[in-house]
Image 1 (cartoon, rainbow, N blue to C red):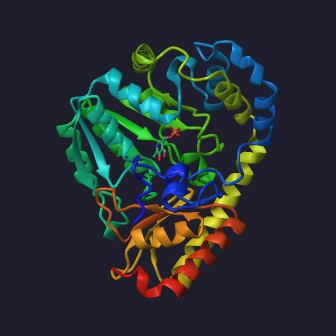
Image 2: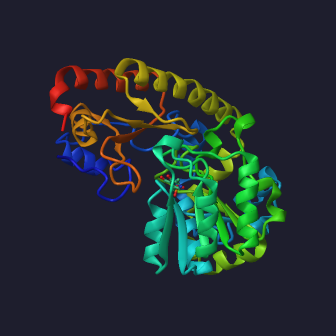
Length: 370
Ligand SMILES: Cc1ncc(COP(=O)(O)O)c(C=O)c1O
């Protein structure tokens, strides 16, 4: 059976092509949650035009992008660090703040645990349960703050799409402040949520001395191969992170792309509208056509639970052979081998996914069972 998450994540095309025996045949990738519109055309065009800039070092202080982000988010540049993806920012947080114990809410993005372990921190966890759509009980989450030095929450959380209300976030933040625990709020997917439903404490940063916000530009602007993300916190925390960052870790083409992305207001609106419409379309189609359970939640992906008689590894294998990658969630603590995640893509691609699923179910029927 294929195991295409051997490096812990979706989107590993090389492993999938090898395991599914597809050579270099293009795959339709629903296993990584990337904007299906692709990067803004101006990003592609400018990168091509500026290829010759690779003969120079990137700006070691990332000044232009930092200034532009500061203007857009109404922050000071001292409150921002740019990273080689949100993942680098998370690594810098652990390296710089040196927590001995890190709290996580399972099921969650595996790098919280992987990076903590890599830098010598121990993990303590609480769980969100399927019956509560994976939102943890707040008292369980609060209890973590008494036991650890730093807590990660995903907002929205990957792979469950869990989000909190503003009042809940304020309570969580108050807990971080009163226990003097760092709180990392990973907002890598927040841009995909319609603006009127986006809930974040970021504009209230001044009030919080222990909170670090992490954002990704790779997913929303579809540049995961280029790598770009940033973290926002009080200047004292940002300075500590900066001290641990390898000079030039963000390349110049990524910095240039980031500057262009921040002007792409129409692209942003089109993306949000597409995801909102297609998320509902996919969710309903999966529930109605297949009768599978789709968890509620937000962002550009859906978490789905197969009936107990079915196994996701078999479904993933059958889909993979047909050139469609889905993300098995069996490896996430708190999830099972009935669970998988799919990205929300364009209508045409979503229909391709649905018809591949239909074929697998019609042809494979019994094969999908345990
Ligand atoms: C919740 C979450 N945060 C952060 C990241 C990393 O983002 P980046 O590509 O910007 O490093 C991912 C990537 O899958 C993710 O799922």
